[in-house]
Image 1 (spheres, rainbow, N blue to C red):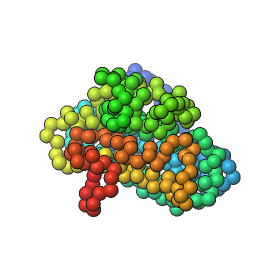
Image 2 (cartoon, helix red, strand yellow):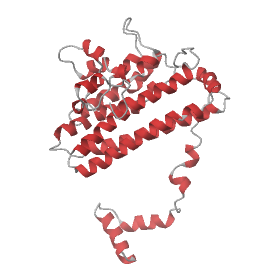
Image 3 (cartoon, rainbow, N blue to C red):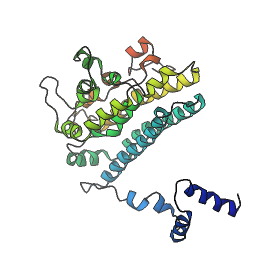
Image 4 (cartoon, rainbow, N blue to C red):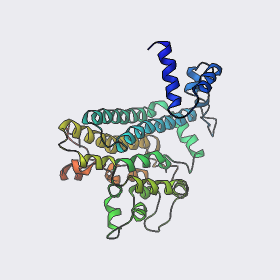
Length: 309
């Protein structure tokens, strides 16, 4: 496109929204050329690590968690594009599922590398200054789950036993699987970690659950007409990686730092981490309709080679 056509196209762009093109063209004359560091906010990004102790590896620990949050944000971006669009082709769906699989694999390999990236002694020293903060308080995990599947699928078998016959959204949240990591079901008492988390985010979780109901990723599958085996395999692989392999790696890292010498240290958030982190306890499945009863029964259990679930 030559220069005159470009200028005309710019003018038309602003005329179409009843704006004066000359104002914007004059503004362009005053604008500084874009730099990489300004575009990615590099100077700000690299100062977002605020260690609470003098242990050098604490900064790396913060970065591990910040990168995890950024990967989750990329995943949410892909999932929202699926749930908010009604006419995606199967080709596009496969592409987006491939991205979600790739990002989940990044989470798995990246988090696993923490065992060589953070000194064992340093971690078990600086972690004492982090209580009661916990990865349990990552809201993006919960937003992602709500976009992927119905609320009922986020309640484990024990939680379902406590539900009334026709539970509403608020009641479902009272028994959602992740609250078991922050509440004593015998006494009904919440940890401080859970209290603060719910104070900040519970209204947003309930609001999203109401908004997304009937339009989750799981609902999209149910409405597909004659989906290909390739697409269904992609959905299952994302489900398996995110809800089995990712929790198992998280559990393995926790074992390395908290139980490496049989010391059975408590988590900073106070949860029963050995039970809470295991996929057999969480029983989280985004797309249960794609799995056989045997696969669901054996969810998260060690499998013979060449089996995926």
